[in-house]
Length: 436
Ligand SMILES: Nc1nc2c(ncn2[C@@H]2O[C@H](COP(=O)(O)OP(=O)(O)OP(=O)(O)O)[C@@H](O)[C@H]2O)c(=O)[nH]1
Ligand SMILES: [Mg+2]
Image (cartoon, rainbow, N blue to C red; front, side, top):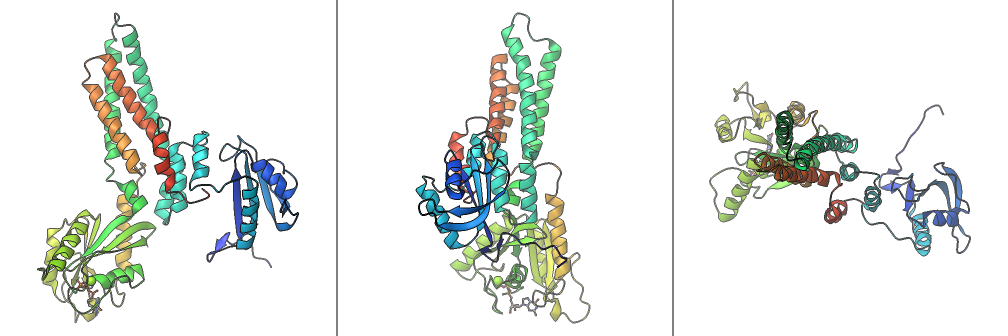
């Protein structure tokens, strides 16, 4: 047995190992009651877990003890690593309930860590995103946020505002001396450069939010071109009905797929033609709306009918890929519109090239060194900060200018969770999974 083996704690839907985390003032007492001893702080100990009421052994496992405040939540924390069966968990949870503990709400551990100053709000949200990440790009973005990519940027902006504020306050406190011209100039230059930087940060094309929620790619084109067949092949399942009858798809059908590590919401749409009835008309309206809002469009046409490709001209060339489908039916070397991908949704011909090109396109627009804005909440606060800086520029008095700079500072603070966010917490932690 020379190989070193591994397995995740949960495989194939069954948990081999389960970790039960306790946090709060009763954690130590519950741990002591379960294993008969309190392990040394931050050292894993093997333990037999007993039902304290009956003395019956429940399981053997590993236990860990993290007395507060040096713990993940800042409170007393205990961890029980046990076998992951339903019977063990239900017995264990029964004991904990009887000991006066209650089941955590979704996100409650992270919420406590935030309230105890272990994390800022951006880091807390990043943990939620990490736990929910389904693709490599989402994991990468959440990890960058957890490591402070956005946080350090916003904190730096706050520090610069604080410095400008200090200068302004001095002018307000000693009005007879007035603000020396060079300091006045410095405050003005700093405010303008901050405003510029925030504006540039806001102009990220919503890429961070798209990465969290899915990049929208729409399939469109004339009826019967093979759009639904294409969707099914990329999704690797029969998500949409296909048939030789033109006008099969009437509504928008959306599937979430992982494309080269990027989360993509791929939408199949009704074939573009003169509508024959009100239902088809509505389908067409939806198809066009979807294609309009998509970051990328795949315009599919029958390679045997090259004129069909002309419909693609009404969409911006940038961000629209031309797909000549049904190439398996092409006789000879038929000329196709320039740049069109030769594919067959039926046989899979040309798919490797197509998917690689698609992945490259997405990577080009989503790979960037600068951190993106990941949530609408952050965007709103940044817009507020920018508006306050703009107002400060036309303030009539230094007092008013200072007030606007303070408002900008506060808006940035709301993103980090350092300023009045009590009202936001329920919304933020609601989407977390249990146990995080
Ligand atoms: N030979 C061949 N047949 C294809 C190919 N792609 C699709 N088809 C066939 O073309 C017909 C239409 O395919 P669909 O995927 O339903 O076409 P659609 O564009 O979604 O059509 P609408 O929903 O009506 O707009 C079906 O009979 C498919 O099996 C292909 O690459 N080669
Ligand atoms: Mg269809």
